[in-house]
Image 1 (cartoon, rainbow, N blue to C red):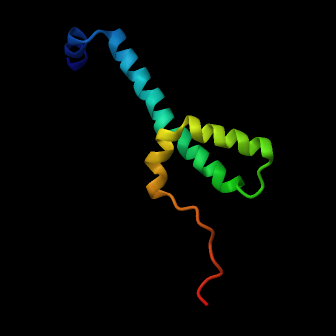
Image 2 (cartoon, rainbow, N blue to C red; image 1 turned 45 degrees about the vertical axis):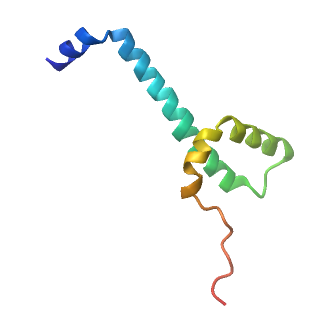
Length: 83
């Protein structure tokens, strides 16, 4: 009963467009920045010049998502421990 009531108010095409925007927005703001953070954490000290240039370009492209996660991620080097 709910899908009939919903489609009578909003067309199926509109729902499809909204779903597409939601998926693309989730990829842009959540999925790709997290994968990029993990990639940078794993490869930071062994990247070549072109790989580093590509990563910097991706950081620029996905900057809004990177900013969302920046306060929660910590990539500082682990120290030698308590002395």
